[in-house]
Length: 262
Image 1 (cartoon, rainbow, N blue to C red):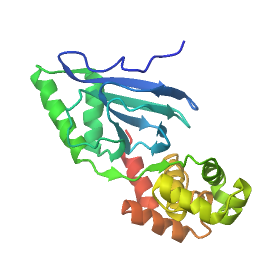
Image 2 (spheres, rainbow, N blue to C red):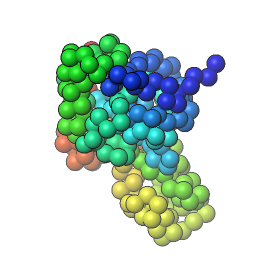
Image 3 (cartoon, rainbow, N blue to C red):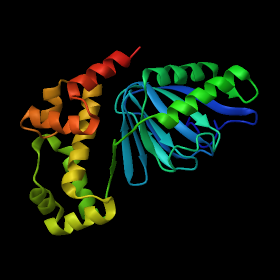
Image 4 (cartoon, one colour):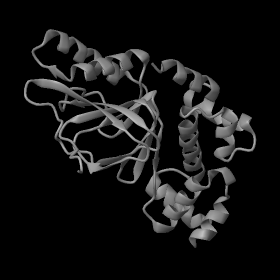
């Protein structure tokens, strides 16, 4: 029986935040849906892929995704996922963006999320629930945003280039070979990426590499394995790219991720 995800868990009158816990098997997909409430999706275990329109986000356990109310989105679980979801009454966290964003989850915010899920419904007139709600909102609004998303072009030729690269990152195909296979010129594809994605192809490729690397590191892969799988011939170049984005080396990031697990 298909589960209904559309608005059925939004906070009821007298409730500021409602929560749910899901255990998903590998390869599980949640069909496109939307909620009347703002939503924060966090996984205590596993990596989630969240899509909205032409964009998608990769969410490992150190991060959560903020999804504003009425945003159509869908989910895919590459591996088993333990999901913890909060539905916030609209306007409860006004400092968070009007579009989807990946947020860094500190150990304290993680424990606040887990406690809220244990309670289930944070009642508006309950003092303890109110204090927990204020802490959750404060730390969500203070959380650092992380560039963990890709936007796919709509143009069929550029989309073919993007999908071919994602599927064959380890081979590190050149843009020229990708364009030839898609039946388009390099300059044409570059223009499409700039106009439809908002960035040049080289920047987009680095972001695709970063997302693949994060998925592998979160699953326990070695730094060298992540580097080679994303097309880097020298792990040092991969380490530098990762450090420029996250401010730490991939080894340190993976160690911090392992330390944050229960």
